[in-house]
Structures are given as C-alpha cells and as structure tokens.
Length: 166
Image (cartoon, rainbow, N blue to C red; front, side, top):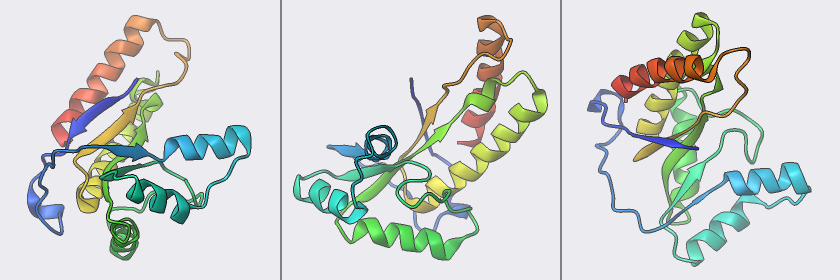
C-alpha cells in the first residue's frame, strides 16, 4: 500500500522551481533492490538506467539504500544531491519520487511517531531538491500490540502532519 503526497512546499528549499510534469512512465528501483536481496540477482545501476532510458521511460523512483547501501542524502548535503541529480539526468531521466517507509507513523510510542514526522520533513526537503513530483510512503509493519483502530488513528495523525509539511 502506498500513499503519494504531492510536494507543494514553498521555493525556499529548492534549487529551481518544481513543475509537476505529466509522467508517461517511470520505474521504481525497489524491484531491483528486492531482486538482489531475495534472489541474489544483482543489476549494475548504469545498466538499469541505460535500459530504462532506451525503453523510453521518463523517470525513476529511488529506493533508500540501493544500489550502494547508503541512506538518502540529508537535505543539507548539497554536493551529494547535485551528484544524484546528475547521475540520473545523464541518462535523460528525472527522479520523480523517493520511497519512504512509515511503520513508525503508527508506532505505539508517541516519541517514535514524532521522530517519524521529523524524518518525513527531511525526506520532503530532499525530494524537493531532487526535483521530485511525489514522495512515496509505504506504511508496512506490524501492529506491535495496537488494535487496528489505534494504528489507523495514529497513522492518520502522523499523515495529517506529513500532509501539512508536503
């Protein structure tokens, strides 16, 4: 299950204005990440980007930690952000979205939920700087002793805050 939040933040954090393009097609890198993890089938990133570009796709959705195993850049790591944008634009592709997780958005602990909202703010700033039109949220995770109604309520509270940030 995925929720998409359009990033309509003010231009104070963007290197350039964000224009929401009409996407024809895009590829999520999560399938390549999971193929490596689950099936030990590894794909060099440049081969993926070359194939995606030649097949006529417009963009890419990043997944945290693939292919290099490192986390997304922090919003103040401008050199890493520029390098990431250049890497994809060299193949004529745009980063249309980054995948994030949200299991802590409905955590039983209020501090964990607050920390998730703070992390969401960083992801939103990064997505804005990468030129993303969307930010993918994957809420998966166990209920950790919560009833389904409690988890939905907590997730709703966190997502309302995330929506205000976006």
